[in-house]
Length: 182
Image (cartoon, rainbow, N blue to C red; front, side, top):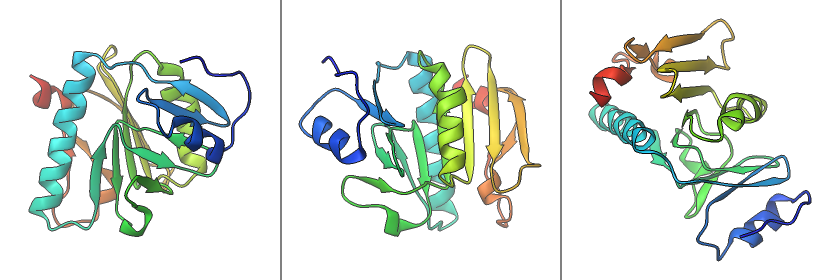
């Protein structure tokens, strides 16, 4: 479907996508068509989300995790992160998360500029606590913990990464992507 070249409000975007089977995101007024993910992309999303779900269940966690397609409505944008972890259940309605998730994971695909630049700025501006960019081509994970600018890092898939939003829990969540996808 062709998207007219103009700036959209969130309400206009929601109306535009209401009965549309294609997936779109709205970032700063621009509608962006989503493409189908690759097999490695889906493998990474599936395995990380399973680790998160298992951790939350095993530790009687209050957070909920969601995988794409699940909308996140921010101030002037509606995005579909690969994985969203939301600890404030009042943000969740029957269609989407309204407000910032605590943790977002994006797996890089053809829209790499959005993940590395636009979404990085968008998530930081809107109060996402932690943002991971998993890049299958580079086999790297870029971790941004916006609550504490000193805790950010770049990791190889073979390294074990501690999830910052759970760092103070008695049992921490640690993820090693290479181990998950082998």
